[in-house]
Length: 144
Image: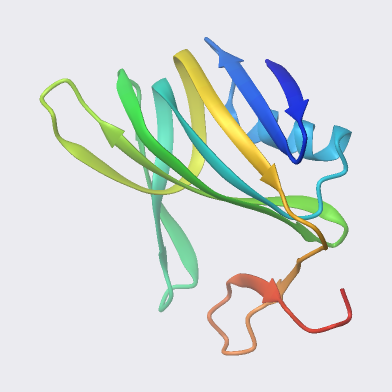
């Protein structure tokens, strides 16, 4: 992994074998990121993603070990209990031109990835949803 800060944005290059979420968390810790927007593209050869089932209050995941293009990687970095909290979604394309995606749990880079982290002013903490979904949601009051 290599990255460079350009004003309020960090340009990141991930290399083959590196895992997206662990690298993004490492950068968030090193750079003391409190809130940011994440966007990226690239390729993966192992990935786990899915969706959150509100009724069951758990994530349902699918894991694949095959090459995919990362058509879109989108999400944010916030804070939960003073630690970086990554919430990323991914859209993938296979060799037949099919695309699918969901909430990203893990993705190992198969070639490279190019990711931008746009740092925003302020801080957003997360807390358990008061509507009882089990999700960690933005806390947007003035305490942060």
